[in-house]
Length: 487
Image (tube, rainbow, N blue to C red; front, top):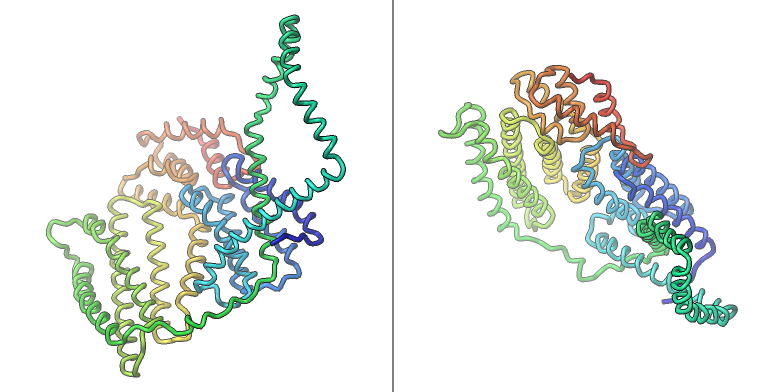
């Protein structure tokens, strides 16, 4: 299929070239900071300008995705958690692709179905194919122009260069042997080329080209009018699970969970533990198992709610009741896991991973509550809520400063018990360094603390920060360390 460029496509390609240069400057020059929100802002400014007359679909969710993407990119400027830093480096481009396809997809409210996922992969393939056809068109146009006007002259020039190269090789060697200063002059030329760092510049140019064509191809493909996907007649029949089988499975599961919950109540309300276990050992032993079982129950609930065949009112009521009971037991197990992790934190201190696990359990609790409502209200959609709540949860986790919370809780624990791991605080983001400064103010004589702060102070003194790496968390920590008089 031959590609036909429209009016204004050439100008838009130059705009994408400018975006490609900005992307290279933003992402390939040291640690990413302010440059990420700047690039996202410019990127979406170009997108909305290009699509100013386009009729968008799924507008509410699209705006939510844009807000989430911008907040996630702003975390590179505001915070400095390395785990979220690496994760967002992969998550944000995927979210951008989903958002762009979402608002240009021809169907409303179909983004939670499998065809939308297929559309994401097809869009990437179409963008690559478009760039390939665009390059072929440019090459064909260039060759055609040369054949008409200058092909003969260029051919003669190339022949002349080919003849001159061996002659120049012989003559230059003779001249170098005849005059040492001329040889030094020729030797300075390669040294000058090495000083230009040509290899680095070539790689950066290639990166600009890749960014440019990726943006250009994606924007051009999304602008094309897409036909509404035809409904597959084979897919009209809904998959139905037998209600008797589902009822049997739910009954057996609830019996097992009832026994388990009874034991949990004995542990947590009678303050007794199985012989040979401390609270910390007990917490560590069962936390991940309970969390996994809770997520497995969520999968069972969502599957039965979506696919069970409700043959009669009695069977429907029985299945809904057992599902509600399963949600209740799952909530108790989630609460048990929450308490286990809390005990483990009290015994060994607070870490980012443990606080993140606590946050994830709050997210699961919200999911369970909605699932309970969905059991009795069929018009609600579980998948849509799961996706939207997951986007919001991930955005909130990146927006709030979990590292600062970890530091504050560890300092509180230090005030109560005198125990703290300064090396773990030092391994956190820049909020951990501020925690070390606060600890120094409380106890300047803490073993090894002065050495860590002096090392950090030297790092701040030696480091340089470009505009694209500006980070508010780093600047706050740098000010705290530099203002501190370390003895």
